[in-house]
Image (cartoon, rainbow, N blue to C red):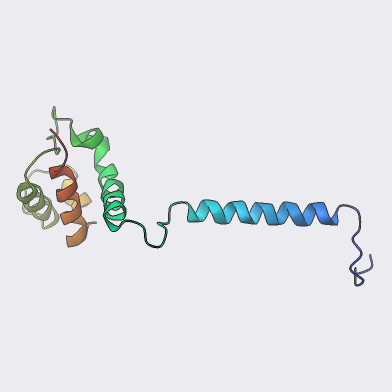
Amino acid sequence: MEANMRGVQRPGERTAHWALMTTLAALLGMALAGVPAWGADDDAVQLRHKELLASTCFACHGVEGRRGEEVPALAGESFRVLRAQLLAFREDEVPDTTVMNRIAKGYSDEEIEALARYFSNLER
């Protein structure tokens, strides 16, 4: 096949080009959908970050931390209590835990504070 050096399009070239460009634009749009816009409300961005962190807790503690049968409910608990408990789990200071010590080890001080603040601000 000869290279198209004159700018003359062969049948199907334009369709393939536009399909590729449309696909790339769609992928870029999906990738940027979760990124906050410049000038976005910092409080809203921080809340979304806390919600994403907290979603890992929902499997055991229930949606929004309200389950309280075999595992404690987190919603509405004191910020200080939640923060202290998470730090104690992380430092292996709580005996006979199931998985919380391993989970808490994955959180930074800032993330532990964000989780404690998020759950303490929820209604019981």
